[in-house]
Image (tube, rainbow, N blue to C red):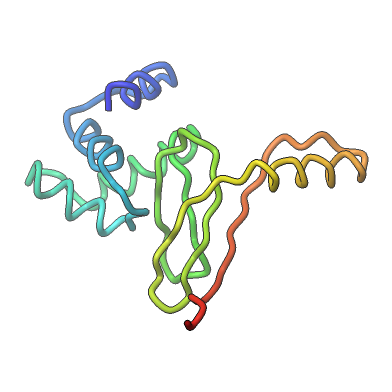
Length: 134
């Protein structure tokens, strides 16, 4: 949490009590919460937080690249703190989002970019699937 507040302060973001609560909710999240979920969790900590404050804060955090907004082919956005590079596998039946890292995949992406004459500077990978039946 302290690291996230430091990142926001370094980005020039004014740190209000309500923003601190929203950052805590995001830091503590083990899922990829929607705006509504962030609002519900924040409201449980500070009843004065409004939905508008959550929207504005998440938009600002997204603009500053402190959080990443994901759509995951859904009808609403979900958010996560942008601290560590990883990819996502989305279960089409449950909506669960599984985070993963794979060094071999990283090498393949670099190789593809280089073969096409590019330096890879950013990317996102989302895989969608159904659990195999046993």
